[in-house]
Length: 464
Image 1 (tube, rainbow, N blue to C red):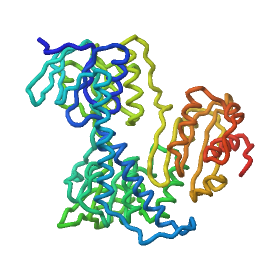
Image 2 (tube, one colour; image 1 turned 90 degrees about the vertical axis):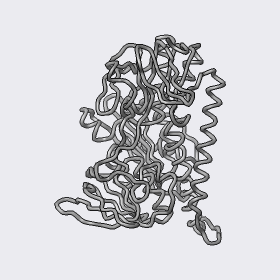
Image 3 (cartoon, rainbow, N blue to C red; image 1 turned 180 degrees about the vertical axis):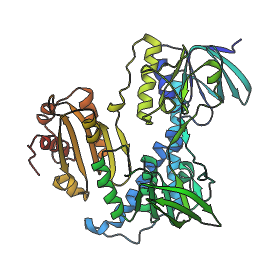
Image 4 (cartoon, rainbow, N blue to C red; image 1 turned 45 degrees about the horizontal axis):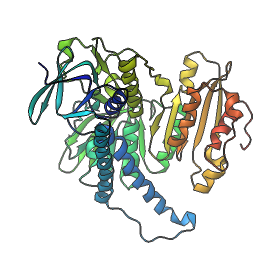
């Protein structure tokens, strides 16, 4: 017999879970949410938010070193890594407490403990008080994911780090190896490189940032190398020999293997879904490679059980999880779902320079058979970018030549993670090239480059 009955139980209080709980409560459902670690999940506590706080410190430090370019004088620049990390943790803590407030405000009942599905519509939560049995017709699984660890490259918290160790370091790396060049790897490489670490990035694919448009990734690589990074593409770390205070990495590069010594290694080789100990197998919930299989409406193979966010597969992004949280709540409350279209979810990487994209890459659009129009505009042609001292960058837009549909937009440069939303909204509204051409963009702004890139796709660019 259940200790308490709800309309909906959410397992996991990350950006998917807590949003699902709030939206369901708004729609009049009685909601419980179960979290085993921290309200806000990985994103708020160990991912999106604290990394951005670290990267902001690195950005300010970089600007301090460029003071003379802006006609300014400053004393000797430096940093206190412990203070940088302390600020990052304070930002995360502030937002963590905010989630608790939102739960109370929306009358969502919070259970802190490990949850498992122990029957049809039944969730057992192991709390400090003991086991509590909850019942609901609808259970939403939003347990997220964790860092993948490859055999021989496992983190030890001393010489080899995961993102958690990199977020709360005990020391400043001197010679750093980053394995993996996705968003997580590149952001940490950018942060520590800016603070002075000799940074090497190893990527097994033939280019870094493999999910990004090839042209944008190549531009970003040039900037990273210019900043002093070593970037090895088509390479893999086969072995780590751990010694006292150092690691010897065996790096396979083409048909040869080279060895190099580092004092710190950050492994960023992907993620694994948190599917263990949930009781999924016993209930018949289908999984595939550590992720729960769902249909486009977040429904699993078992009636009344849903999955959202990282646990439900790519793209592994907080804003995708939140959108799914709203969607699943509305599906359960009033049968009015709105499925997520992965190609309409923007991806943002907060390295220096920033990278942002939405929709199809040029290669993908061609693979899908589109006849395309491609436009580009450089930051060097924009007055605001030059005034900011940020003239390195590019905006690229891809259109269907037949219909004028905006198929994709890809950016690299200052503040592009803020600019990308303009194109996201455009795609949601099914905007055509004519709509964008006829839109007046304010001057002087970086957003003018978005306009110029569209114009360039049709041979009409004004300032380039």
